[in-house]
Structure formats: structure tokens, C-alpha cells
Length: 145
Image (cartoon, rainbow, N blue to C red; front, top):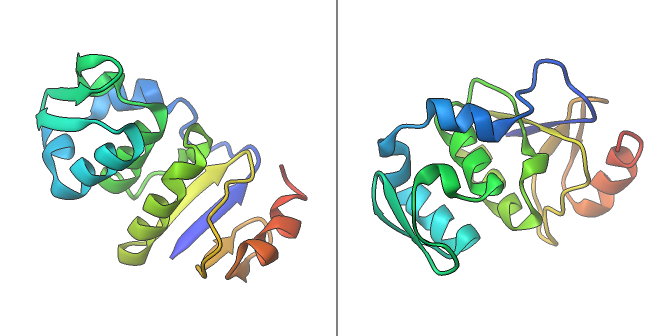
């Protein structure tokens, strides 16, 4: 299940770029699920653990991936930690939901992320309410962001 805390959260890791730079491992990048996320979100192809082919930037190191992809990789590989997922755009929402189908996941959001038109299950930690659609999520999240 996906747990979301809206607004400032002292235990959340806020600067995901610096955290990623100092913690990622090449195996995170070459994982098939990670390759699919990188292809979808950054439109880039993983060539190996240390190099990604970006249509915009050319050959790049993993630390040059978008903030959204770096945060997604942190969520996947360090699920026991809470990360600021406001570094992610709405194009990352489906990946967050996919990960939360397989593991308990808690994120911190400081904006209203669009989780799409489909059904989902999100526990809003601020109120301990479970919501199943954007129609249910928006009024509650709007109180905190």
C-alpha cells in the first residue's frame, strides 16, 4: 500500500539528488524494472550500470538522471526510508503506485500529485484516511499543501 504524508515531514529525506549521488549502486540502474522506469520517464536507454543514453544529453552517468527517476530508484531500493517525492513529476505517479502494489511504501509530498483517473489505494497519513480516487484524495490533500 502507498502511504502519503502531505506537507513538511522531519523524518523525510528532502534532498534526494544528494542522497542518490552518495548511495546508488550500479545494480539499481541495470534492474529490468529500473530500465523500464528510465525509458518511460526520462526517455533514455540504460547501456550499463554507469552509462545511460539520453536523447537530450547524450551519454550520461546515473547522477545526471532526472530528479524524478532518481527518487523512484531510491523508493525502490531503500523502501524503509521516506523520501520527498515532490521531486517527481506526475509522470512518476504510476511508477510509485506500481511499487506500492508490491511493497509497503511511504512518501512525503509537498504538492498535489496527479495519480490519474484510475482506481488506487492510498492511505493519507495526516488523517489516516484511505482514498481510492483523485476525487477522494484532492479535498484531503488540499488541506495540507
